[in-house]
Image (cartoon, rainbow, N blue to C red; front, side, top):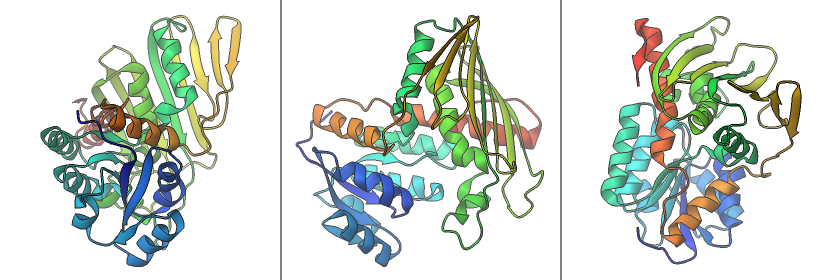
Length: 335
């Protein structure tokens, strides 16, 4: 893989909250990176972020944004229904790409994105930045070191009573053709990716996607799935926008112990082995995108692969698509 000179020159496609509050600051704050260009369908928004973050230019022309000679890498920060189109445009222009999560609306789209990146000889990663949390890495290492014996089951519950009204810029998340699903596609995808990081790739999925309470949304308000991983471990995941009390709980139960977190983004990791309890307080970076951008940038200047690639990122999409297909057919789905 080609070694890029410093600084790595970035364009951001999509100028929503993630781009403004997380991605742009992570790029401009890295000593080996430079923010060159911003693309949005709304010219005023592109110019607003250009001015705020000191980029050279703003544009509403996607071809111009991703095809410019002074752009090395592109961060696709748009809604998921645009991921495939915009990622394909960038990689076919010879640019390295990080695409926001979830990777795409379908596994087929994700595979097309990977194939195009391979053909172009560029790197493609998915923005599952929680893999870089110190907590996530410690769980991975503790499992690898045998701290809980053989992993048997990972249990995940993520949910809230999220109210996304039609006047909210994020309303697309509640539209099946744009968001692809409910809380599972939105916040659940991050947790499924972590499960794959800890347990390996999925093999089979069965699941249900239903509306129990929220008839104000077109997407399901609860999605529950059971996955059998290639390792033999099981994964249980519930993602919902129908509960009054926020939940973000993870537990990995093994033959000799359990790793658990009650509020994944904020609370300590607990290792329980018999009567012995050990806590690890491992807060993430203030800007969760910083380690993601740092690793990808360093990979380009060092001529190596990023730590996590799109082949890792597509696994969560395989599980989610399997859940929806299983719910429709009433059958277990090979993924």
